[in-house]
Structures are given as C-alpha cells and as structure tokens.
Length: 382
Ligand SMILES: O=c1nc[nH]c2cc3[nH]c(NCCN4CCCCC4)nc3cc12
Ligand SMILES: [Zn+2]
Image (tube, rainbow, N blue to C red; front, side, top):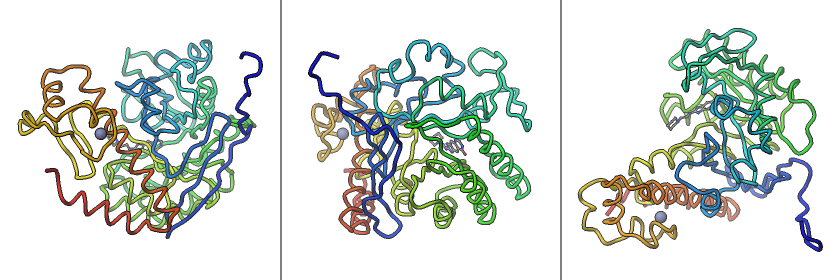
C-alpha cells in the first residue's frame, strides 16, 4: 500500500456484542478481522464463488455484510487447493468482507449420487462429473481453511424428514461426535470462528441433548440445523419457540437455510441472529419478485403495459430506473439483465427487512414493526 495510507485496523479476534433486545428478538454486531456483521443478518448465497447474476460490489450495495459459500460445490469445482493457490476465496471472488461456508454434509445428501455414510464420514460421487469424493469432519475443516472462510461450520448430518425418533436421535448423536472431531481438527485460529450445529429434528429432548453436547465442546457460535427441510413453517416456528433458548445467549445463533420474508421475521422474533437462503436470488432468476406487498410474478401478462415500478417505495436500481413493463419484457425475452435486476431488487428488499428489524429492536418497537410488516403484505400487490 502507498505510504501514509492508514490501515483500517480491524480487531484480530472474532467477537459478538448484543446492543439491544425486544422480547426474544436481539440486535448486535459480530466483529471479525474482515469487517463487522450487523445482526440480525441475512447472508446472500454465493454457492460457486459468485452470488448469481450479481457483481460483488452490487451485493455490497444491497447492504450485505457477509456471504455464504459452499464447501461441497467448491471442493468439486474448482477445488479448494486451486482456490488456496490463488490466494483464497475472498481474493478469488473479489469479496473482501466476511464469508461463512457451509460444511458440505447437507449438500452431499441433497445433491450427490451413490452416497455412503459411515462413522468416518461420507463418500459420494460428484454431481458434476461422477468422480468419487470423501468428506469427513477433518477434510471439511481442511477445505474451509484452504478457502479462508471466516466462519467455519462443523461437519454434520442433516436427517431427511419425515424420520422416526430413533433415526433422529442416532443422526444427532453422530453429528455431535462429528462436532467434537470438527473442533479438534479446526485447531486454534484467532480471528476465525467455528460454529456448532444443533440437531434433533422437532424433538425438544433431542434438541436439548444436542445443545448440551455442543456447549460442552464450546463454539464461537451456534447454528440450528435440521430445519427448513420440509417440516413447514408452523412446525419450524414451534421448534424455534424452544430450541434457540437452549443455546448460549452471548453467542450468535444461526438458522440455516431460512427463508421466505415471513419465515425470517418469525425467526428473528424467536431469537435468531443470522440466516441464509437461496430464495431471493434463485426466485429472482425466475421472475419472482418479493415486495412489501407480497409476491409479484413479473412474467404475468398483467404487467406488460404497466409503467409503474415494481415497488414505488423501493430505492434499488430496478425500482428506481425501470418499469414493470420493462422487467416483464426482458424476462419474456430471456435477457440477461432480467436476472440482474430482479436479483438485485430481491436482495435489496431482504436487506431492508433486516435493517428494519435491527432498528425496530434497538427502538423497542419490534411488535409494531412486525404488525406493519404483516398488514402491508396482507394488502397484496396492486
Ligand atoms: O442441518 C443442516 N446442516 C448444515 N447445513 C444445512 C443447510 C440447510 N438448508 C436448509 N434448508 C434450505 C431450504 N431451501 C429453501 C429455498 C429453496 C432451496 C432449499 N436446511 C438446512 C439444514 C442444514
Ligand atoms: Zn426494488
């Protein structure tokens, strides 16, 4: 760097400070050497080292403080070793702020073929080229270290639902043994964090057993896994009515894979600090816009002549500079800009929900904010 440039001195540690609570809802800041994460936080998903259809600077412009990457996808292509040799994932994808990486177990079970699960780990064939691979707690930690991930997830097993109690307990106990092996393999890495993942399905006693096991091992943060796997919102909320409270209050709580706007609001209301979901980006590419008045499918013919923006209150580039008619046209014509604009809008809207909740919790007015959120959605699109 040129002389005289003041280095923005970042903390060399990973820490979480709670600023305010309102009921069970919390707001705070996670400090990391690569920057701060305002909570409650929503993480856009950058599976293959890109948030699809978005430049990194655009992702930042939506208000994101942290991205999610996937061990499973990056180990298959371009491989973690190649990314490490090129300077790590941050440099590779030109995102210098925090990155959290999922540990791969969930993606193996949902994406690969010919999987074999043993106490040691999982062997599987790549969905990309059919090549054989193995993931273990140790290998997952090594991959996430090679990537340079700021927040590393334990290697776990997420049971497919519906599953009987015996299967849920057996799977959770395997994940807890893998959590211990993950912690051992992670080692002591100041400035980097390792999060444990609570399992146990929808069962209070198994969630309790899992939380106790994780606290005994000790982690920098605690995720709730095994949810958003088809149980439905009511069952998920019923579980969130007790499961987060079993985890330490002074550490971040991360609900994996969630979700729709109302899932996100309901989760924050129940004490969740971090979430991730492909929904805003994936649905954006299919023409599905999320707005304060509910969902809008821009491909619907009713928009063909509509000169109004998607959402007149939204300040994103899609709503500031384009009409519904234009968005309708570029989607119908399969123009690349269609994915860019709708993804940008959806990510911007999701971040606006997070900012709204952070402010509301800090101001002790979460209930009022939540009521306005639901009442406006009930109006439906105009
Ligand atoms: O238990 C988990 N351990 C590790 N990673 C996970 C990721 C997860 N992602 C989800 N749900 C994702 C649901 N998402 C909704 C939008 C469409 C694609 C799937 N549950 C998860 C549980 C886990
Ligand atoms: Zn917008």
